[in-house]
Amino acid sequence: MAIQETASPPVRMSRFTGTVGPLGIGVAVLWLSIIVLLPLAALTATSFENGLGGFWDAITAPGAVAALRITAFVSVVVALINVVFGTLIAWVLVRDDFPGKRIVNALIDLPFALPTIVASIVLLSLYGPASPINVHLNATQPGLIVALAFVTLPFVVRSVQPVLIELDKDVEEAAASLGASNFTIFWRVVLPVLSPAIFGGAGLAFARAIGEFGSIILIGGNIRGETQVASQYIQQQLEMDRPENAAAVSVVLLIIAFLTLLVLRVLAHRAVRREERAA
Image (cartoon, rainbow, N blue to C red; front, side, top):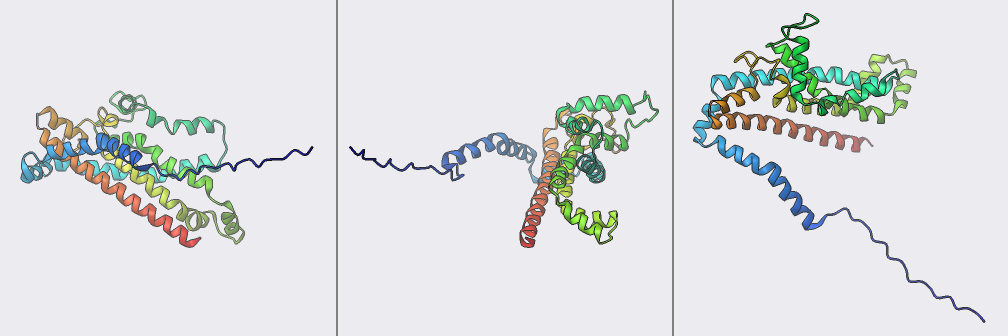
């Protein structure tokens, strides 16, 4: 007796399209509004409580101008320092093997996890009036730079490191076989590939530095016109019951940070387009 086989119904495979739908978009927009947009709107409204003239007077006051100038200067210096040493550290971590490499790699992320006020205490103990190494940076701009460099170092290292890992070494070996020196290989072959990541990390470091408070609160000294940065000026205005002035300077910092991140996004997009055309 023959057994008749029946064909099983075809199994329908569902395909994930990658879209979240209107509900997901609504939840994302709602959460973004609560966490980011509403606080920014409230801050902006507070900064303009005295009108456009009051806002302008607040951001052009001598103390505000001095604090913004010092903040911009030390943040640019810190970003440049991170470009050099952050790239160097990333290169060593990727290309070299040495005892304790995993420990050093883990220590890079320490400023992300460490409360910044702790960093200020440590730096004050090391470079303050009672410095055990006889280096006194308390209440000086170099002290600000050291503190900000500490908290912003991971940005460049972690931006450059994955690019170095994915970098094709065959191109470097081909350049070396043609007689190119190490400097020429780095300048002509490696650096153009790393440039977007370096600029991106430097921009993030700059954006973080202009708003930093905890790491410089002790070692900075808060001297008006010398070491008082914008975040300390904002705190001072709040203590003097001038929330409009504090909000106005905060809006200026937000604009600077937003423009920095916007430029980084545009540069990154252009770099991706350039790579796609080259491919």
